[in-house]
Amino acid sequence: MKTKKVLTYLAIAFVVFYLYSRPAEAATAVKGVFDGITTGAGQLALFFSRLTG
View (spheres, rainbow, N blue to C red):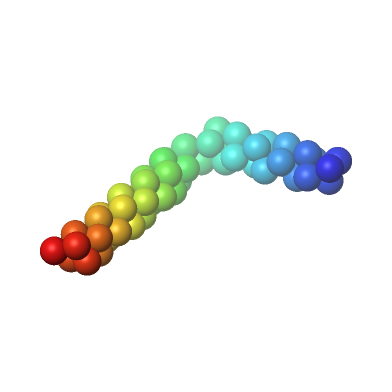
């Protein structure tokens, strides 16, 4: 459990450091993640709409 906690804190520290040191690149990365989620949700909705009718 201790290793998992340390890795979690390191990941959070890296994200905070990245946000402060390169805010434009961080914003682009976040936008890319949300675009991917939106595209995936749209494709999933299309799949189910074609499946049902």
